[in-house]
Amino acid sequence: MTVDVAAGLALLPEGLDLTPAKRRLYEKALELFSRDTYHAVSIRDIAAALGQQPSTLYFHVSSKQDLLFELAVIGHRTHQAALRDALMDAGAEPRDQLLCVVQAHVRQHLDYPALAMVTNRELHALSEAQRENVLAIRYQSEQIIRDVIERGVRLGAFTTTDPFLDVKAIGAMGVRLPEWWTRDSPQTRDGIIERYSHYALKLVT
Image (cartoon, rainbow, N blue to C red; front, top):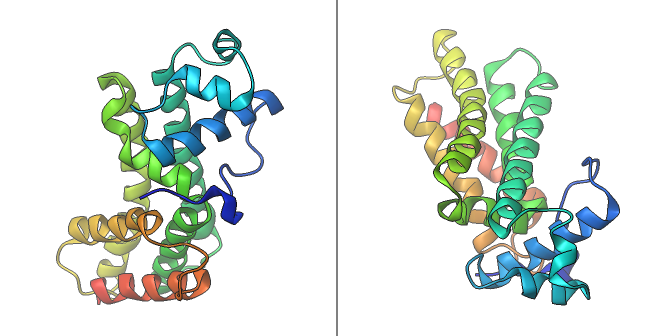
């Protein structure tokens, strides 16, 4: 499954601390990695798609693996920031908190499908140290959702007995979206966000 970048879906979020040249490099790498997979794409392929010499790319990244690592960190950190912002805006009720956080989780995967696909699908290509770094960010993001659920249990708002599995199921719902959803799908973006957040609520009640 590949992401149709011609459909107007964003490759990277706005507001990243990137030079225009580095942003173009990251976006082209995302486009190619999501279409052909990481291992099928070389630095030479990325350079050719940008109309540049391969040596030019090494001004921005030291290797293709480091390029993937930087993309994975961006993907996981922007996802985590979206969860934190949603939680801050949700109020004090556990039900509202869970709905808002899951909506943010799903929205990130719908709005940046190439980034989500590459940073989840290609982690095996990272070094052990790089992978541990990325997974530490993912764990912190999962903990945001788990804390909401566990607090809801303590307050009597939720009845679940396994918040760990609930978080894993919620995570998987988002991760799978870039594998099948496009703007041509009969299911709308807003409809999926709403439906999936209520699926999550049913898991814990």
